[in-house]
Length: 342
Image 1 (cartoon, rainbow, N blue to C red):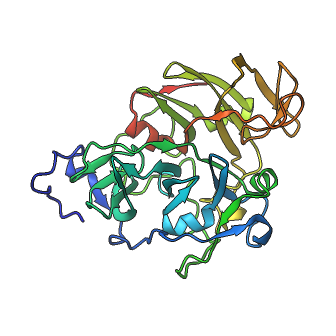
Image 2: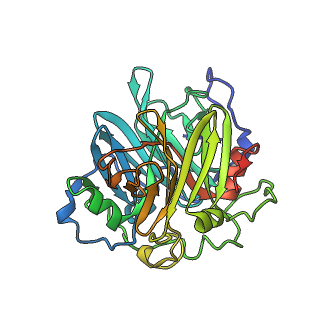
């Protein structure tokens, strides 16, 4: 896949090749899931309430991808709502990103390359063996260098909340075709706020420690970061990015997958959601409530998934905004001009 040189006739790489490092495993040493199997919500017996899942909803096709499985595979090639997607999770940068797998008239299939850039997953597509950055969604070395995948909103939320909101949804099964110790965290203690990122050689933006958790949003060339500690204090942060007003929500009740030996046993880092707070042309002002959030305009209550659960707007869904829950070192390395919202 990658031998330290460029492919003849390919565009110039977007990355200094010296910045691409081997993460240890060989190509496909961490196997992607290419034929995912799913369970109905009622058939899931391997989850606990606070365990993190990646929530994806495309045109009402609602699916949950348990982090305890993604921890060992990092990429799921799937089709959701008729859209070919890749759902990805990089433990080293603690980031979940979903993409539309279509590039022009081709549908790509992605695998793990065994390589890292800024201590973040580098994928490759099996059609052209172009290397792709998990974090930027761009082809960075190879035939499709410069191509960019469309990112799709995906959120890391607790199993119990997702299950109750989506009784008809589908859940990725442990029946992956591989034998892995699902439920165990092989990155014990990795998210220590004073820790050091693995194989990261860039400069650390000194505004925060490398492993400070942030919520990152990028749009129209504009990027913001909201520190998790700020969200813990306020529960709701209003911001603007790329000319669009957004609201960033936080709610307690989700375990860190990277803390304890057991994925469900980690410290409570909560869950986040980012939405455009507009309904029928009206701007809603959201604030914290006992079991979620409430808007000042109609007193409707909302959950972390951006759905109104009671009140005049019950059943209404806010438009989700693609965001990344990640570590400061990664976000600031890829987006050094980011603004901090606090």
